[in-house]
Length: 190
Length: 169
Image (cartoon, rainbow over all chains, first blue to last red; front, side, top):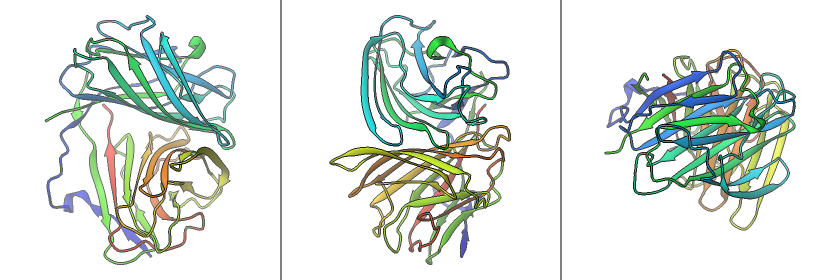
């Protein structure tokens, strides 16, 4: 027997609904190789990025990457990343050090199942703290009905600067296709 | 940059009687993502499965990454009749042993297939990261939650599921 949910307005108690805010969203209308967020305010404690992506590379899947910066994007070899990845048959761990971007999670390429997009949820923790390097964590994945990967990733930006800029880019600098969406949120501390 | 508070509770179900299926229906299309947090108990341990918009066709597929505490691995199913919310981080017969968090990304758009990401955890079973694909461009307006691919079994009293909406600027 189906049980219907209770409307939130009927719930009594202390619902906290003002600590998670939408900051900005980019939805790709014309194919582009990079997506950027700039001038991110220092009014939150953590940032979260959520989205769906697909790129134009003529492969089944391609790798999505992210870079951070303060005032501009840091393109130096100041990043490290680790991942555990499941491809439907095997779990594989990998890592990189002193690279120019963080990325392991994949998205569909032009040869992947039409209309399928990969997804990601990225947390950038304590992003405005100027006393420590910045750590990100990623839940990501792409399923193409017969292929695809699920990922858990971490990344390190070896900078004590506050994060004010975020950039997404694909391996090979291929374009993000129409309907790819990137949404940035801020999470407040007490 | 625009800003606005979001992460809004849409509905919560806490069972006061056993049930075969927990349904969230008439989900409004005013958000960008949906998040479903499940803390459940089954009659017999099993996997959390879901159907969207009452679609019983084989339009679902998923890829699983799991760890059991002593091993890890990956698995997949293609062209099946329901999505999945856990593997080793499954729902068992004790409330509080497990939690599953399902994230339906861009659920209200009508141009792309729908991808969901899941993290599931069972204190005595394991942990999972999962990705699901629903091969439909329809906006999601209903989610049915049940046990195993047969969508049978019984949710037990005290099981709680909360649905949240996140709206992008």
